[in-house]
Length: 187
Image 1 (cartoon, rainbow, N blue to C red):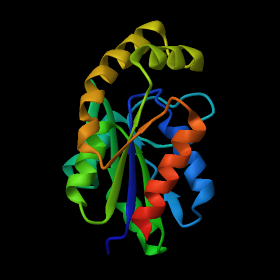
Image 2 (image 1 turned 180 degrees about the vertical axis):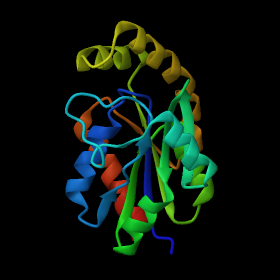
Image 3 (image 1 turned 90 degrees about the vertical axis):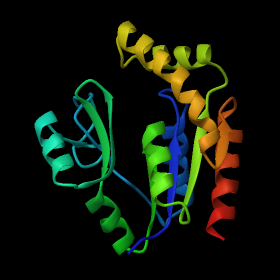
Image 4 (image 1 turned 180 degrees about the horizontal axis):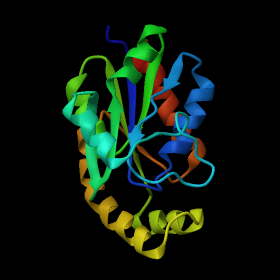
């Protein structure tokens, strides 16, 4: 059984998670797809709510067992992916899956589910603003921020592979544009 899905991707710090959380409150039929990751849990995060936190070995075992719809090694031994069981769980309830995934994962999901997905790319107003947002979060070291900014410059080149590009220079406008695109897709 394959249902509908909404795919959000963006460089880290562009605001996609904030927009996704807003949309979850606006569309009661949406259910967040919890990604799996091998990265360490951050303060305040919970296994099975924010992510499925797996060891690198467990992640690799699940890859070998074909348990992922898509997965990516974002940094060395830092994997992210979508478990097939997560999609099946959400669609079995008749809900629409909403994703918050890295850009390569977003492109892969759109390629696998072209007819029943809407892909949205959240674009930061500038790379400098992206850096400021990452610094403002206070969750990453200076080295990690620079690594994310460098990666963001590559990720921005993927924006044309998405159905809709939402520039997040004004959060309320970005939320509204995303809502309108999704409402149109669901009709």
